[in-house]
Length: 286
Picture (cartoon, rainbow, N blue to C red):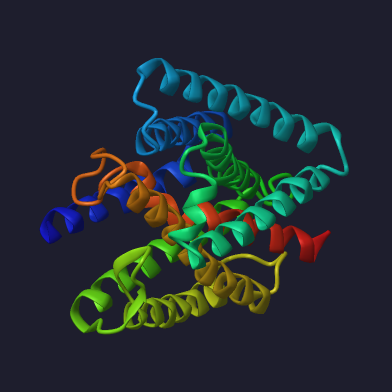
């Protein structure tokens, strides 16, 4: 399993780098939309929407919302001087959701009483989890694009690789040195040693990234601070998916990525980190 996990990681990293740097915005948006649609399918499966027609409807709704967002982002960048206002709305909604998700995690399993039997709530939780991530990825990819088309690309690569480094570091440190459970009711294998070790390693990498990235529009110290916040918040995204999987009685959301499980298992931390990171950047500039 460890060998398979490493092989998948070494394949995913160059694919991600090439996709971020080489794909024009429309193909890039389509690629991210496909990732979100697979995530939506896995979300439905994880929450036991066993009827295929229900999952197809979930994907259809998500697909429609993704297309609508692509149009809004494109139009707002081209024709509106206040395009960032759209993000403030989604960013604020995302912050409220992750604060709520954190409270659900801390009070689990008691909190499951309020949502485990409600298809509407579980579907709504999926929208609040996946769509702000989609919006954040596209917004960050086009960030400052008119003046310097490389700024958003570097910022996006920075946060994606950084969160993956945090996840991998926490996994290996927790596996080798972990003794104290982080939240055993939610994720029995996660430890405080892994959590702290992952933060320390990814913080060091973030310092190097922020110091040497070719970005002038944002001060390196701000990128560093926002990155630390995103790293910490990313754990909430990870634990939220772990909580839902635990309640569903499954280990992985799918089997799309060998050694990692499903798409949700690979990008769950990014669901929380990306929108918060983008929100902080836009808040500081606008």
